[in-house]
Amino acid sequence: MSKQVYEVDEIKSFVKRKNNRIWIVYALDRKTKEVVSYNVGNRTNTTLKVVIKTLNLSNAKKIYTDKWIGYKTLIDKKIHSTFNRATNHIERHNLTLRTHLKRLTRRSICFSRSSEILSAILRIYFWG
Image 1: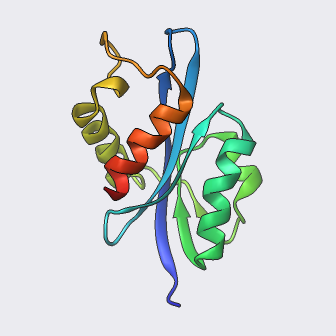
Image 2 (image 1 turned 90 degrees about the horizontal axis):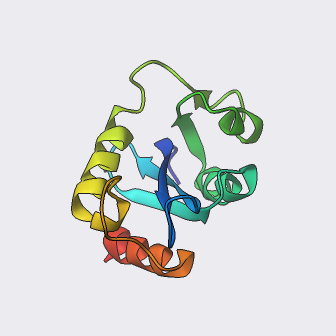
């Protein structure tokens, strides 16, 4: 299996009400621009670990992220990179997600009633 290059980022959303925050962590293949893994949950290492484990199993050559401390604890220093503008593709994908899925828009009357429904919607959107 060839080695892959990925970008990882998180998006904040909410379930039921605005103060019930939930995070969507996902990884994007840098070459194909396809989502390879995602997880929905709190902004903790437990949520992030699911995505990072998938990337490690796929023999990741490089993983680009922002400078959130959770990434530093879970990703090996040899393959982790936090360069300026290294996550342009996934940040653009975040905007596309927010545009296509109204429930992820910051100021909207649309929302998810449960994290399971949100996860199912994302699975359909990512892998249709």
